[in-house]
Amino acid sequence: MSNPPPPSPSTLHHQPPRTTTSTHREYRKGNWTIQETLTLITAKKLDDERRNKPSTSSSSSPKPGGELRWKWIENYCWDHGCFRSQNQCNDKWDNLLRDYKKIRHYQLSQSSHNHHFPSYWSMERHQRKLHNLPTNMSSEVFEALNDVVQRKHNTHQQQQPQQPYVSLASEQEPVRTDQQAPEIEAPVTVSEESDSSGKESSENLGSETKRKKVQNIGSSIIRSASILAQTFKSCEEKKEKRHQQVMELEQRRLQIEETRNQVNQKGITDLVAAMTNLSGAVQSLIANHYGQT
Image 1 (tube, helix red, strand yellow):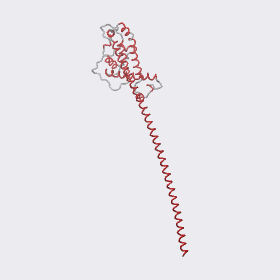
Image 2 (cartoon, one colour):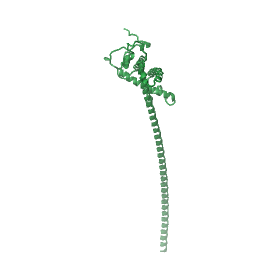
Image 3 (cartoon, rainbow, N blue to C red):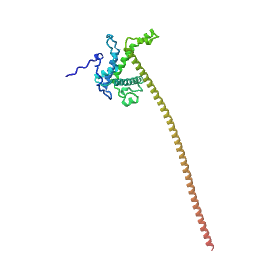
Image 4 (cartoon, rainbow, N blue to C red):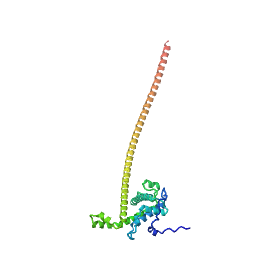
């Protein structure tokens, strides 16, 4: 019996995942595979599309956004071979966004200072770790995340021109005007964008703080290296000076020993001469004594 063909990509966002009871589900644990990650990203993209899509049905029919978001994503992932819970999907999505923003921020810095930073995709695993970057992000996952983020950003940009017009028309009640918007999904999207902007701002601030810390550490290292170099130089100079003093003392000792040897040698020579003269005088005296007798 052959399996039914998979749905085409053009009809995926029109087909909600099959509702299956989660009481008997056995969720997979451990690391996510690339295929599971791509399935989650696709589910998140389709969820954003169904929430941003304006409702054309009657008011009696429920909107697709009425279902819990991450439960809908869990059902989609479950129907496509990714057996993860809604909490796992939520946590994984937060981690993916955090890693994506780190890599995007680094790549933007690398493009403006390409002579200082190598590209993320050309670095080895240990090099990415040294730059405090995710070590296992694949280009396929990054491109899929970039597509979702860009779609959400474009949607937010399309909604922005309406907000200044409303705030100018009624400056005293901007919040009330926003609350009277006919779309239910719009506040959720704007809130998500605000959360994403807040997270991005905090991460940019954290990156700036880390960069300042690294610069301070680098300055401290350079200052310490300079002090160490001066200390080594001073020690070498003192060592050389002590060596010269020792050489001078050794030379003086040799001179004193040589002088002492010369004095001793002269004393011995004089003593021998004196003994010789004394011997001659004694012999002469003896000869004179015998000659008289």
